[in-house]
Length: 85
Image (cartoon, rainbow, N blue to C red; front, side, top):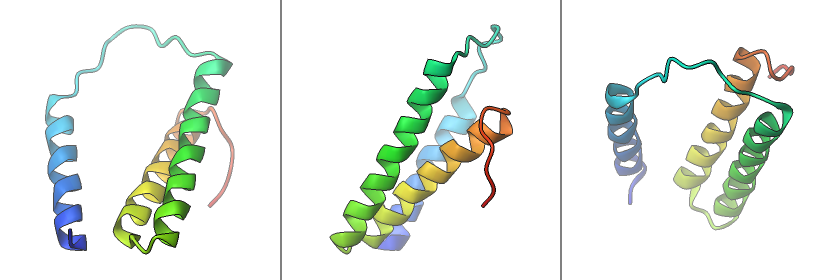
């Protein structure tokens, strides 16, 4: 799959989700374990990015590291993590 095709696939999928997403309206139930799980998921995406980079599947590597950055940014925006890029 070309980079253009991969980008198109991700854009369409994300547009669909943004069009369908519903906020629950409930009170967030966050604890340290929830935050740790998100951080572990971010680490897995980074490992995926390195794996695909080594396999020269750069488009998948870039998508994986972008997911990682997105999770980290979300934690920071929610006031649950502190760091600077």
